[in-house]
Length: 533
Image 1: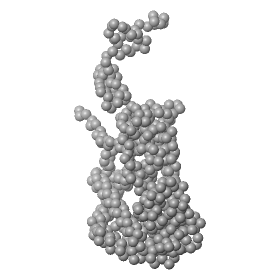
Image 2: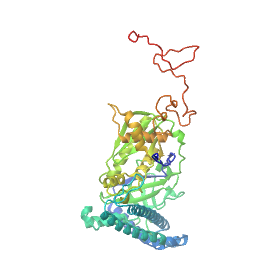
Image 3: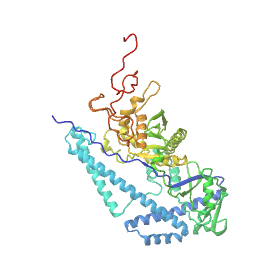
């Protein structure tokens, strides 16, 4: 009789400290603008937006044949209708948008390839074949098999088109956003009128952004903001007659005051270091905003042993909450589990605010715990939410699609750096399963309710600390007697003799007395109670 095969576990990637944020962006409202200010901003944004659309069209036409000469020719053509600095900002934004489209195109091709592989595998299985955890089985009926074969043909056709477009350097870009242009075909579902949609569409296609330049006055010659908050714009050549200041500049009748990071921003512009600005209109509120941004030098992350020195907070990310648990540096849970809830339904602004609020509460609690780092799973559901893989499990697909892994990771790293906390990214393999197996039951009591997610937080924290997830080393293979010798418990991974046996001098009796001058044995001492006598 053959022995059952043991489950093959995949290799666990090493934990690492995530890099900090590489840039900063702050925003303030442009208040008390006059009618002339509003008119000038609209005219400049519309004029530059038209130039940006033409430049993006020319860049897409160049495709893979683009080089420095074509770039210089495009920039020279834009300079006549704007200025050399406006032309540089427009061409740089065009290149960034084209490169983003290429990355999205590659991700789309990889998703189609994954779907085709899954469909081909399932279609090759017999009807009704049960699947395993490692590979899906066949389809349940011949009708389902037929429909999936049709879908396979459709996906293969899409894949061939996408590959051909990538080889030819063709990308599909919509200035203003594809979602907004699709709303035009269903205004009732978008809850918009034709006039509202047109106003929003035009505002999204405006261009009012200028890159900074170190060494120039206040770090930006195109959109200049002085330390006292005065905002002035270098007008394009066709609109120079609207200037109300020297050298073709227009000064807005408003003052900006950056409350958040205002001191850091002021230090940069007084030192004439580069600061990029963007002016945009919130059509829904009817408000103009100014966003300032700059890059930061890549900060060397703290070493992993330093991040582990004061313990760790393990965080399990779920669809509606963070499950966090504090651990000391030895990997022992401290206190009770903490849960930080958020609601990811509703608009994008509501979801973003919910995530920021939950992260803020998590970071404040981690500060009170006195730790230096937070352990987090290095999650990426990009290849795990296709309908070909999960089939009818629509609720599960909606669940993993609703977790904003990328945005959550970026926000947590950025906000944690302001609190002086580091993020230790760990491999997510088996954390929920092993945490539930080894930690849920031992920590459950009448006063403490443990969930699977709380136990996963402990598993994540222990992996971030470099400890094994299970609570103690394995017992002897036969039973817990002396057949194979006892092993030490809770020993560190690098401790010598961790898997060795204990010395055979252990006293078992609770009332054992020390015997000086004699060899200690496992024999129990005689009882002195009257009842036993």
